[in-house]
Amino acid sequence: MNQVNSAVLDANTGWLILAVFSVIWVYLGWFWGRKEKGLDDFMLAGRNVGLSLGIATAMATWVTSNTTMAAPQLALQLGVWGMLGYSLGSVGLILFAPLAERIRQLMPAGYTSGDFIRLRYGTFAWRVFLVISLFYGIGWLISLGMAGGVLIHALTGIDYQLGMSVILAICVAYTLLGGLRAVIGTDFIQTIIILVGIVILAWLTIDKVGFEPMHQAVLEERPELLNLLMPAAIMFLFNNLLFGVGEIFHSNVWWSRAFAFRKGVGFKAYLSAGIFWMPIPIVAGFIALATPALGLNIPAADMVGPMVAAKLLGFGGAVLVFIVVFSALASSLDSLLAATSDLVLQDIYRGHFRPHAGKDELRKAARWIVLLLGIVTWLLCLPRLTTLASLLYFTGAFVASTIWPIVAGLYLKKASATGATLAMLSGTLVGLWAYFAIGFYVAALVSAVVSMLIVLVSMWLQPDQFDWTLLNEQTGEEVS
Amino acid sequence: MIISSGFLSVMVTVALIVTMVSPVILIILWIKDWVKGQLW
Image 1: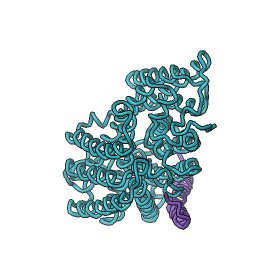
Image 2 (image 1 turned 180 degrees about the vertical axis):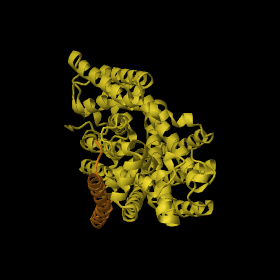
Image 3 (image 1 turned 120 degrees about the vertical axis):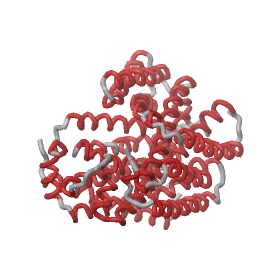
Image 4 (image 1 turned 90 degrees about the vertical axis):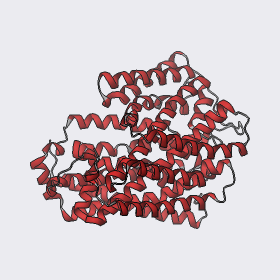
C-alpha cells in the first residue's frame, strides 16, 4: 500500500508546502502563547472560548486525515452507504452538545474527563476509565502520527520517517508554545482551509465529469456502489455511529473543549459543528465515484482522492489535496496531543504522584508532558508497525463501554460506582469477544448494549443518591 | 435498490451547499466575536 509511485507531487514541492505551513503554525503558536497567564490558560485557553472558535475546533478535530482520505476510499469500497455511514460520525458531536453544557455547568473548575469519573464514581472506576482512555488516546496518537508519515510519503514520495517526524515536531512545537489556545486558533484556520479545499475539488469534479456520466459509468462498472441494500455497508453504518459516539463521549479531547468554552457556548458549538461536519464525508467522498468515468486505475483504495484530484486539476489539484490533508492531520494531532497530555498531567501526575502540586509546578510539568508524549509517539511511530495502528480498531469495544456510565453519571443520581465500573469492564470484555468471534462491525454495538444493561440493572438493584455539588471541586456551591 | 442519477445529484448538491455555507458562517461568527472582544 502507498508506494512512492502513487505520489502526485514531487518531493521538493512537498517540502516547500511543509516548510511554509510549519512556519505559520509555529509562529501562531508562539503568538497566541506569549501572553499566557497560567495553567488554565495553557490547558483550557482561559475557559473563555467563544462560539466561532468553538465550532471550528470541534469540526477540525473531527475532520482527521481519515475523513479526507478515507471518505473517498469508503465511497469506492462501500458505495453510497460508505459516504452516508461516515457522515453519521457527526451524530456523536450532535449528541455531545447537551452533555457539553451540562459538564460546564456541573464542573466549572474541572480539567479532564478523568476528573468527572473520579468525583462521580470514585478511585477504582477512575483507574479503569484511565486505562481505557489512555489506551484509546495513545492508540489514536500513534495512528495519526503514522498516518502523517504514510500520507506525506504517498503524496510526495518524502521518506516515511522524515514526513512523520516533521508533522509530529510541528504539532509538538506549537502546542508547547501556545497550549490549547494555539490548538484552537490554528484549528480555525485549518477548518477554513479544509472546507474551501474540498468544496473546490467537489465543484470541479461535478463541472468536469458531471453527475449523469459519473452515474452511468459507475452503473456499468461497479453497480453495487449505487445499491442502497449493500449489507456490509449497512453494518458499517451502525458500527461507525456507535464508535463515534463512544469516542466523543469519553475522550478528553472533547471534554477539555467543554471546559474551555465560555458558559453557554458548548451546546451551540457542538450542535453546529455536528451539522456542518455531516456533509463533509459526502462532499469529500463522492469524487471517488468519478473514477470509472475518468478511466482511472487506482493502485491503492486510500489514494483515490488525491489521484482523482490530480487527474482533474493537475498540479494545482495535487497541491490542494496535500494542503487539505496536512491541515486535517495537524488539526487532529495537536488536539489529541494537548488533551492526552492534560489527562496525563491531571489524572496521572497530579492525581497519583503529586496531589499537592501547585499551579506553577503543574504549568511547567504540562510542557514537559507535551514534549514527552510527542517523543514517545515519535518512537512508537518510527518502526512503522502497522500492528500498532491496528490497535485503534480494537478501541471500539473499549470506548463504547463508557457511553452509558458517562451519560447516566451526568444526568441520573441513581447511577452507581459499582454499576459504572462493571459496565466499563464487562462492555469492553464482551465487545472484544464479539470483535474476534463475530467481526469488527459488532464490537462497539455489543459493548454499548452490555454496558447499558449493566448500568440500568445496577440503578434498579442498588441505586445511588449522588450529590451533584461534589462535582464542583472549586467552591462546592449548589450547581443543579 | 439502485439509486438514480437524480438522487445522487440532489444528495451531493445539498451536502456541497452546506459545506460551502459553513466557512462563510464561521467567518461571520468570528468577526462578531472579534468585534465584541469575545473570541476567547
